[in-house]
Image 1 (cartoon, helix red, strand yellow):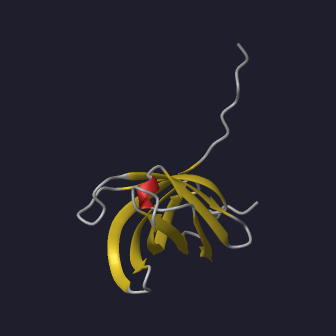
Image 2 (image 1 turned 180 degrees about the horizontal axis):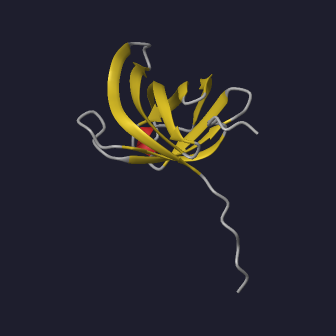
Length: 131
């Protein structure tokens, strides 16, 4: 078995609060072995489930994904494309930084609307103890 870290698996990730990220977010991420990526977060206003792709090896990875965005009434407002670079500091932990472009319903792109540091921890199996 390789001792190099691998991003493949399920992760719990947090996005820090910054000037362009007014509230912290928690997300659940899955990096599939075939290079596909799936993410969901705890704030429906931040966007739908994200679908994307990743590349990298060793301790450096890059991923890009897209979410659809709606207003509080559920009306479609456009989408976000998020690009992230992460550095694994152990097989079960990483830090990084993400940026996002916003694309409105007319197709107008606003670059780098969002930028924030992120931190991820690999999910671990928790055993069930019968009562």
